[in-house]
Image 1 (tube, rainbow, N blue to C red):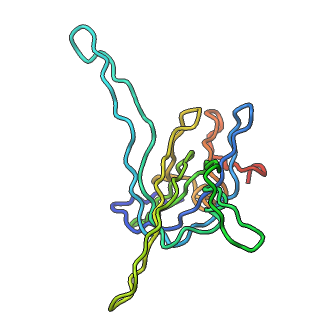
Image 2 (image 1 turned 90 degrees about the vertical axis):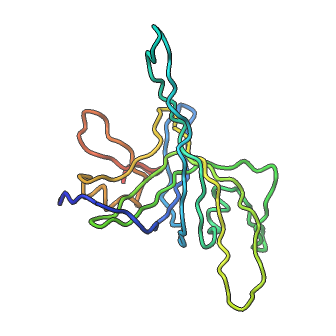
Image 3 (image 1 turned 60 degrees about the vertical axis):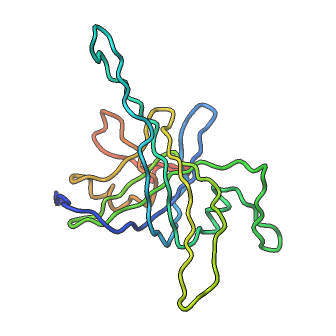
Length: 203
């Protein structure tokens, strides 16, 4: 594959989510990524700062405190599928979405990309949850203004410590092209390649 290096990035697009399942013995798997069209913006701040351990009068050791990311994902409109799958709203027999206070929010992977001057930069956050969006709107005035919807997203490490992955300058072409077919999982150390995993098996 061509090894082209980006100098800049811009334009959020291709947001997807994939539902996360963890078995009783701790095996992580994902459903097939589902598009979330209408990406407007994403703003995620790193959660957790390195901490110094002091001994012998100096910073003897730096403790890594990576707790993932917190922030907002703004969309033109939150898809009904996401409301059902991740926010656990229920569709009744008459096609009405019902929000229930006793519903447990579900975990998911969040996939998205930015344009680059050479190639797109594709990301996945492995273990996300989203808070319920607020209700906001206003009447039309002299001109129409699109009312977006915002999800507050918390991305935390999986049990093995994995937080996120993104494509780089030398990412395998097949991995790059198949990014939205299945959630990318790192290969074993002796494998030398990448693998994609989902609930139905490797793709």
